[in-house]
Image (cartoon, rainbow, N blue to C red; front, side, top):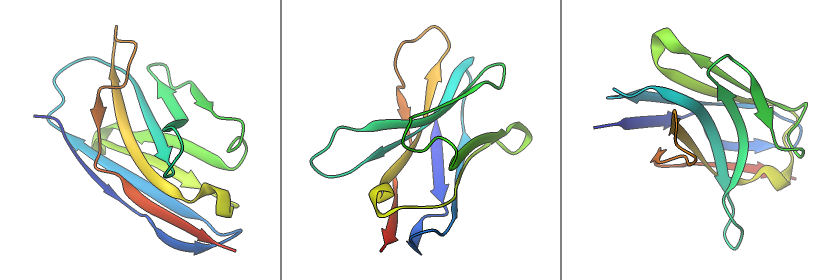
Length: 118
């Protein structure tokens, strides 16, 4: 069974930084991408960042230049470094995995709260 342990969230002042971690286990399939999503009540879940097989990364415009996604494969851990945080970044953040050949992210972490105060 695929499992995730997310950590690193919390409360931070605007302009500050946080690093989210997502340690996974039980993956037996070939991975197409790792991603970080976030969701605010009343809004659709949004893909924030993704990292693909060759190490190519992609970001939503709002976080471009502020967030960095990375993967430590030996430790089975996905990271999201978040700098210059804004109150608008407040959300529940989810790590996710997309199987190669699949069009959707089907495996999800439990979510972790990030709150940015003004």
